[in-house]
Amino acid sequence: AQTVTQSQPEMSVQEAETVTLSCTYDTSESDYYLFWYKQPPSRQMILVIRQEAYKQQNATENRFSVNFQKAAKSFSLKISDSQLGDAAMYFCAYRSAATGANSKLTFGKGITLSVRP
Amino acid sequence: GAVVSQHPSRVICKSGTSVKIECRSLDFQATTMFWYRQFPKQSLMLMATSNEGSKATYEQGVEKDKFLINHASLTLSTLTVTSAHPEDSSFYICSAIPYKYEQYFGPGTRLTVT
Image (cartoon, rainbow over all chains, first blue to last red; front, side, top):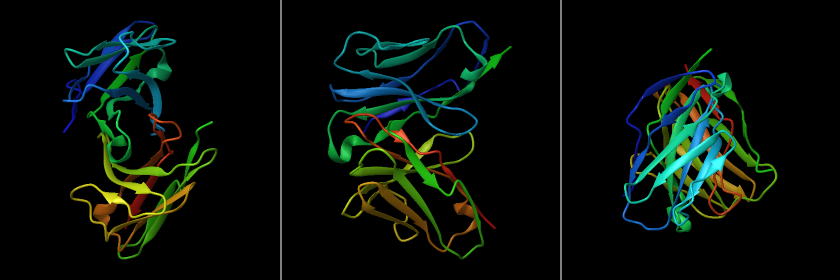
């Protein structure tokens, strides 16, 4: 079974600074997807970024980028130019590339990010 | 696109009664939907996978007789909490997959059982 580990429960960053959120995972599969989801105080889950395991290039979405190290099974999220609206709980998630019953997500425990003005 | 709605957003019910939560995909068809439960400051716990036209697949430890799931159409799945008790109070979230690898989530339903 796959596992996703987010070992830091909380982090804080100064507005306009850069912060990196860590995530490691364990799997025996070679083809899979990794995600970072954001859950603000409204509790609406929002997809931040997606990475396909077969792609060596790290995914980037505006101020958000990942450092995907497949051999190390590491998938960290970097937030540049942090904004007050980035304050939220962030979840790292894994999904097998197989369809059917394997399409469910495995979530990490999440990390609460606060942004200091 | 890819909007998932839930209704109601909040519900309060008395112990022993049943409550139904609806999850709809508004602009796409979803053969598979998922139901999660989340406690404050914790991660999402998958309860079951809802498949259109067939029985739901429940995760280990989830009581299928208490949490009834019906996926009656390609745009609607319902979760019914039967004979609710205070320990069933939680935040329930559904999700659906419009594309092959991304789950989109509903806004959640806060259930309080008194």
